[in-house]
Picture 1 (cartoon, rainbow, N blue to C red):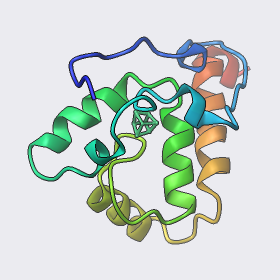
Picture 2: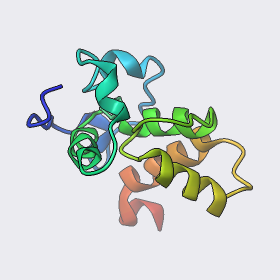
Picture 3: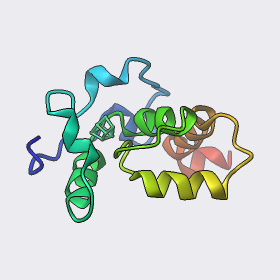
Picture 4: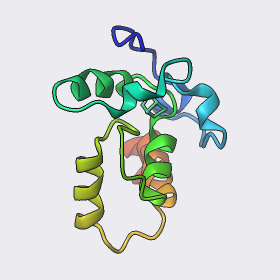
Length: 117
Ligand code: SF4
């Protein structure tokens, strides 16, 4: 994986953008052409992988999938396995991370002026 490449945010990262939830998110993954093993690094190398996730246009979809499926290992959606476990412990009542994250992203994209209207 070329860990020096950080892509541009996708259309969903633009304030006021449409509600676009990418079902086939793997096709747009920043890491799709890379050796999958790079997602399973430990220690300091995780920081570099997380930086790649930060520029991935389907980060939210990837993270929701990992959380909903309780994916145990690897970095997904910019979070390490340890970070995901901690998040799942903090929010045990969440039944659908996909719904939660999608709703949060919609609210963010509407922006504060539209949210209060
Ligand atoms: S967010 Fe997910 S799909 Fe995107 S680069 Fe990271 S691990 Fe790959």
